[in-house]
Image (cartoon, rainbow, N blue to C red; front, top):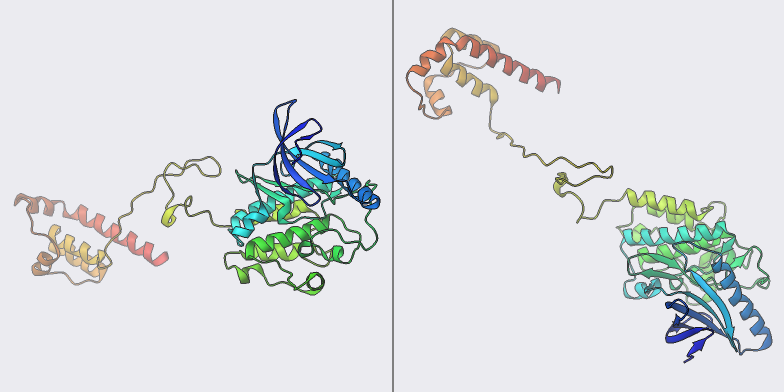
Length: 389
């Protein structure tokens, strides 16, 4: 293992990259851990020139970008037959490794990852840079869920001196756009297609274009219309089907014209999805003291006591009137409510035994007219409410 690259002290290797070994190193000047991406230049002269040019192009392209969702480039250099780029050391995992363990991710997590990648790509596209190789192995998911796009090794800049040969295909077959397959000139919309393929895979556990070999995959990419993600994963909302259909459109004009619009639609889709069960109110009752989206505190839930379905308010009113009002007043109420006047036996069955003193009945009889008026008014208001509700 190499122990020194320029001023950087190599402390271990992180894996094999697309064009060379990736090392973990330390910058002694500012005591910072970095990732060092290398390319071995001990190749044939024509290959060496091409790979070295592409390598420095990555550094120049990514070094111009400063965005939370794009890996930060610190330095570029060469040590004998090894060229290298020093970049921020990311503590996380490649999305590819995550999908190898869990081929189908939760819908909310997929939307979050794809939205972050779309924002990073939008920033790169606005600066004239097309990634050309968007795929899970070029996306890092950090421990806090933050997402970073890596490896602009085959990015094409508007002012790049390195040009691909006519008809030469760069990228990974499963994630390439139709225009990449055909070897045509590409723009930012090609990255959007590749991101759509990646999102489809995360939602369904498989890429939308399958084949036994590269030619079969390319044929599918050019001709096949993949099944809706929701047909393979019922948790996928209908709006997300439409979003991916637009991202995966083979017609460039029908596809998303920029990654920012894609990110905006994904946000709308996510906002329209139900909240997680752990944070959602139970049984539709607001949780007490929890601030809402406007920062206002929800009211405490109020206990509601319902009436028995067997309770008849008019009959109960009639029994009450018979116990408290005069005979004439009860007869008048009986005609108004069209209910027969109850006898004493019915009254005793419908009400608990009285524990009131004997003088209560006389006093109640004296004030019966006022009470009867209040009872009739209450009943009539209730009837009108029922009729006109």
